[in-house]
Length: 141
Image (cartoon, rainbow, N blue to C red):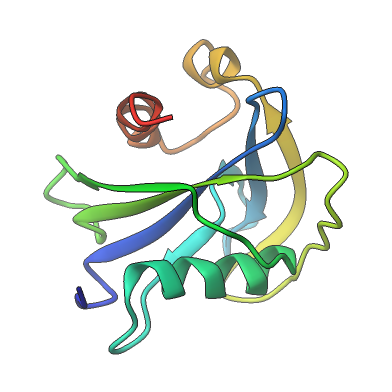
């Protein structure tokens, strides 16, 4: 299925052997830091899985296999992305992750987070629209 790249975001739920989620710290053009899942928009005529594989390769220099996938519809009308294609990816913590610093924002670091950390803090993720995505996504893991 192909959709406009400004409507659908490909998002990677990368899990390690402890079932921790990998998030990337970004710095935007206003020099603000925030955490977010690896991924990005689709390119023209790109399908979901290939888009996510490309984004993970660009950001983390990893070749991945998607074990499960699902689509979450956004509930916020002012959001650019109206839906998220989420691919669940299992990797070993010792995987050779190498951050690539490209795109509009700079990726400065990655960190493994316990799911509870994402639900119980206001300091980790600036964009609170992510919480419904995480909660919905956990049903599929």
